[in-house]
Amino acid sequence: MAARKHHYQVTVRWTGNRGNGTASYTAYDRNAELIVAGKETVALSADPAFRGDAARWNPEELLLASASACHKLWYLHLCSDAGIVVEAYEDAAEGTMIEGTRGRFTQIILKPRITLRDPADADRARALHHQAHEACFIANSLNFPVTCAPEFS
Image 1 (cartoon, rainbow, N blue to C red):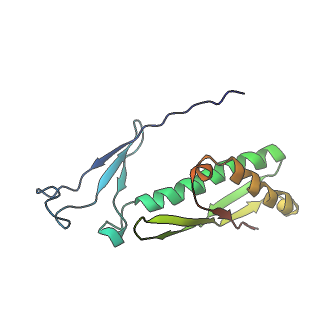
Image 2: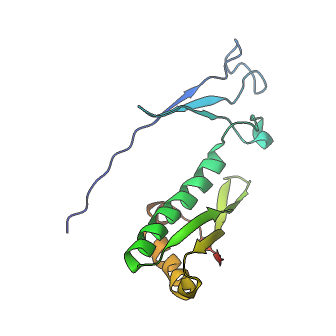
Image 3: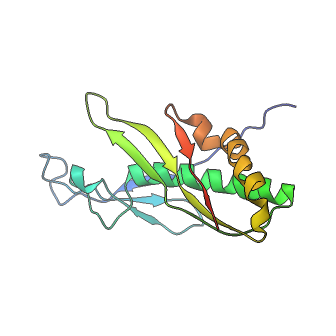
């Protein structure tokens, strides 16, 4: 089977010029907008540790959210194919980043809490997380571990 190619396009527009551009490190805001045609604009900034606005999404949160959302989509697909009915799914994902000469993420831990229609499906449902991880486009693109510690109710 030939690989299918998908192309994505986003616009990130910096909105943090206070009038003097980047004249100094403290002269500008880190605010920006994430724009995708036909979708709501997302307010972006840096992490507050890097002079950003805590009320806006930062790149680190977006990376973590991408990994969590991709895993969830694959997991729900696999459960559906296996005849396992998921009634609720909520992931309290966590990521660890270190600063240094080259800052980088060192790990992501997905912590989904899943409600199954039939609790007897828990063992089969737990096993599908490995397959979801193997299929996840985002996890396959990262160079650090992404692990999953699901809980079932």
